[in-house]
Length: 66
Figure (cartoon, rainbow, N blue to C red):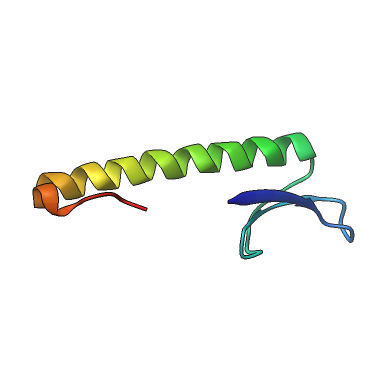
């Protein structure tokens, strides 16, 4: 999961992982929400591509990526 939180000290918005790691900083909440959405989309695309490549190499040994 990815979340958007406002940094009270700077007024900026941080895009953070469920573990609290900052993966992006923006000056507006709208930009932070878009960045979070695009990062999630990119993750899904990367996971699907990796699974497809692994299946090409290993066939049915790859059951499901998580």
